[in-house]
Amino acid sequence: MVSIEQQYIDTHPKSLERYQVAKDLFPNGVTHDARNLTPFPFYVTHSEGAHKFDVDGNKIIDYRTGHGSLLLGHNHPEVVKAVQDQMAIGTHWSASTDIEIEWGKLVTELVPCAEKVRFNSSGTEADMMAMRLARAYTGKSKIIRFRNHFHGWSDYAVPGWAAPSGVPDPVLDTMIVLEPNNISLVEEAIQKNDVAAVILEPTGAHMGQEPIKPAFLDELRDVTQRNGVVFIMDEVVTGFRTSRTGASGYYGIVPDLSTHAKILGGGLPGACVAGKADILDMIQFRDDPDFNSNGRVSHNGTFNANPLSAAAGVTALRIVRDESVNDVATERASQLKAGLNEILTRKEIPGIATGVASIVFLRIGLDVDNEDAIYDVPIDDIEPRSDLKKLGGLAMYNHGVDGFDRFLLSAAHTEDDIAATVEAVGATIDDFRSGGLL
Image 1 (tube, helix red, strand yellow):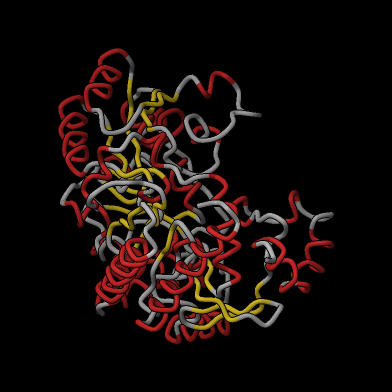
Image 2 (cartoon, one colour):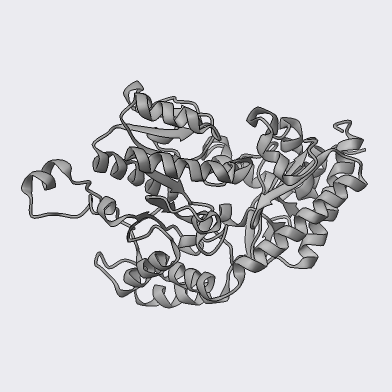
């Protein structure tokens, strides 16, 4: 029988041709770490709704959805028209605009903590700004973060997530990395250090693959309030996805600051920090020369709230606010979880599908009885097997699906897409068995 990898090689010759060029242009031949794929990545030509089409003519059900930015699906007609209309009148005026005001108003309407907003161009920038604002506001230097939680690729976000190569030790020393779901560790760290802020992904590391106990969010809110520590929710992915009001609204926890990107920009580059006015106003000039010279947080950015991203973002957030896109995506996710759990049972494979709202995780090999039990599994036991993760993505792509252990649903996915995806998982399990992996 042809192996999973060989089948992928045999059926994607045009992607291989492009990789032969790209590998000499880019490290690993890709422009984003998440697009690394062995033996080579696939190349996409166009998209529509819940599907994308690769250079070898394959129609693929897409669960990466623009790294989580496309809650509405690919090429939503209203977003496309808004961007086209804006392109026709201007892309960058180096000036303030009506559309940025509208974008900001939508953020303050939807985000529970948003008294004021500052736009950026990426989630990495937003997280950098949130941490700097917290430090400036409190006059303290340390930030508590949690192991494996992702807050972009800046120097300050590296400890506890990636190799610290290239980051000076004094920078690393300002970050305190803790295990999640243990409030006593947080309290102890706050008592022993000059802690400015606590930052986390509210559903857990890797968008919830390593889940946070909802009660831990309540505990963090209480501890940070009592100790004058800024509580930052990184909602770059969960914002407008977990619910139209994000994870904050979903769990009923209001942080001091939250960071947003992905869905915020409607599929174009766009991000923001939202939160308490007195913290955001660390950016604001005052009638105080000493503050302006020494206390203020300066912030430029060529593409902050640029008209194209604002046009896409305004349109997407209006749809999120006014239509049932979250409900549809979450319903499809529930259908997918049920289908995946049924196929695992039918194939007699230990495992479970879990998730929050429109994000689903397939956990092959994890033998737990129900979804709530996932919170009690040690983090080191919850990561997918590396061999299954590597080959699972290839196998699923061979069967017409881009997604294996994590699925980011959109409102464009249909019940037929879900059925086809469950069938693809079943075929992938058969491939694993044929290859001696299960």
